[in-house]
Length: 316
Length: 316
Image 1 (cartoon, rainbow over the protein chains, first blue to last red):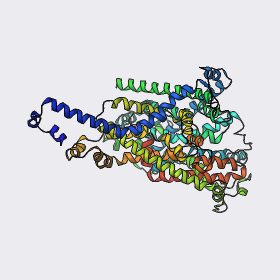
Image 2 (spheres, each protein chain N blue to C red):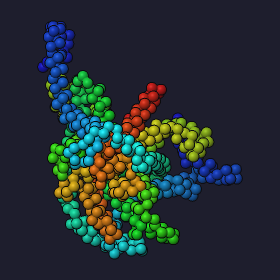
Image 3 (cartoon, each protein chain N blue to C red):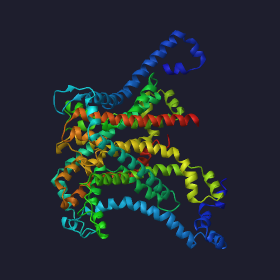
Image 4 (cartoon, rainbow over the protein chains, first blue to last red):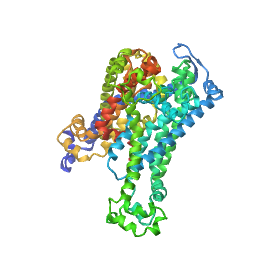
């Protein structure tokens, strides 16, 4: 009823004095306030407790010399960070993270674009192929990791059999640090290239048709049109994929855990943080410091992305 | 502009250039003949080489490993522990599935995964709908700030929060409990963001009509907004189901007893007990049990899942 009164024509409104009017508004504001909190508070509280609070706690834990499970801890300031960056682990872990990220991001984007071009052809069966290519992206990393571990098995795997066919001995993929990184990267790219392919496909299909046709009338062949027209026009898609795949590569865990549980050669920042706290060492403070380093890297990437998007929006 | 494409469709402009400069001048008269016959040999070869071969290659790269998992899950140790690769299993023997389910309590894992996924997804979707509705349709002073906080939460990777959340949940007595697995993930920034973006596009007129009819927020939400937003809600629900089912790092850390393990964690347990050459068939059977449910859901409803997971590529 009050709402009807408020929305009704001037005649009724004139009968209400300004004071009364303000009173009704604030009653409505108060009610909206309560409705908003009732609807949104549970979710916001959960996000605060399990997403924001851990960020603060992580920073606090990172200043402690603390064994997981122990009731006592000593405050050591930045010692955990200093220990990490001066240890022999640091160059190894940071190097592994860099190699893993660069190769998986580059690999899934380049292969994704090639697959997108194949999917963009005007033949039958592209809908099925598109679904098939995307499928690994939604499957359990643990299940996928086991299948590939079997394929890479030096004794009874398909790969070993293929290598025997050309007279080669299968290498020990798991035992060799460099080869285990190659193996995990390969599987990660296999699992994620479908995502890049589908996003690139959407980009390809939204290219302006008239421009592409004009180029083909001008005599530009398929390859030249692709290099000179499609690639530059796809740059927003490329940038989007670069950021999203970089963020997810830096967080890759499932495949590394299932394929190389000891992190032999595959200890990225996230995996090292896991191993330090929940592997054999129980070094909670040290692990928290590595997590904070990882978070700082992710934050920088996100901020760069936001700055770039802002600029693009500004200029367009 | 649109009349250009029938006159010079992509395919007909290719022959001269694709055949190379050699045949250009010499084979001049041949080109018009090829153009007039869409089923000419050159056209057919080009369609197969340029269209089908890349498409089939991309599909095979994805499908073959999964097919290998299926075939191997029926193979007995004798068929796997051999230097001579056997592609097809001798029979559709379900022994591996039986062994996998008796070595570790797979039935229990399945039930746990089902409970975690159902409860987790249901609560998350409801929370996302409520929060998104409040953010779009209820008047509240700090909505912009809250939305930014949700956007930031969207970018905080759950991996950097595992140690603080482990200490929090373990302190609450949530170790080796299903609620301990479900609770930290319940706050949903992704669902809220996606549904908010959708609710913003709804025309105000449909809500005004309901408001004039005297419908309160609760009725407006469930009788007007939710029904017209079903595709978006389905997208959020399916993406949530997939990620809850596949979730690995958190259940791995918070459970160490089989009674409360989910399928991916249980598969790790199976890997520890069957991780020799003879156990590959059993592990493939276990991987099938984890992967197939999601594969079926994906096959049936992939449109929503792909749309949800590639969200942002279009909206920017």
